[in-house]
Image (cartoon, helix red, strand yellow):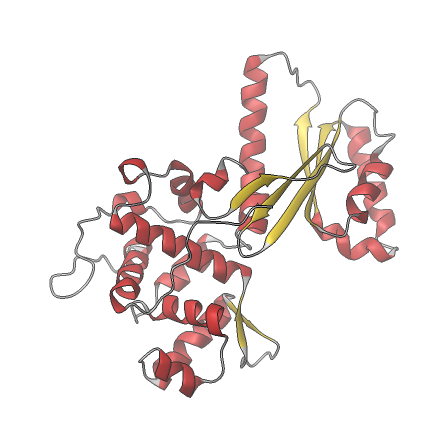
Length: 298
């Protein structure tokens, strides 16, 4: 997660371990604590205590359990988690993430270290990074977002709602200098995708969801790419890795590609090209407050 924070999509600081084996605090305009325990030598005898310790902590966004992959451990873990279904802590079980390490793992074996690290990185990327830090953002969300036929407007809406909330169609359409019909259509699309939420199933007073906020952050980093300011030589390997997981292959679109106006060379079958067009248009319209990659640390 510390390496992934180099994408500049969130900040990373070491957390207070308290009773845990490890802990970190992920920072953005929110703070999400990830803490965890390891199960290695006590043969499943301490699983009940470990899980209770993890679930009792009220401020944890994700409770990580890294355990030796043995049948008795899996059996005991299943028994313990099942027992919590009949307690007030049953709702906290959704925060529990279990990652299994091979039972014959040898910490002194360099090849075993590399293999296990790669496995844990892949599994934690799919879970902690995508589900916690990026709010569940996924490739289908990105494709649906990019497919809008009104370049720049979805980004402008997310930015406006995040800053000012959403009063009504007429007011927001006036602020964003667009038609009420266009605004209504795009707002409903963002609601269906899950980037906007409302207390009403029919929509209304909207707010930006975690995945919508993550999408806005990704777009901001893509703007940096188009401006040539993403990093040394305009590269950011961690962002590139995360974007590929989201189906975004932005390095395949050169920064000198004409994305707007006459002569634009945008492949309408390419979600990445369409997404970059949205970013370029929102940037040209000055309609968006782009999230800066600076995150407050304690």
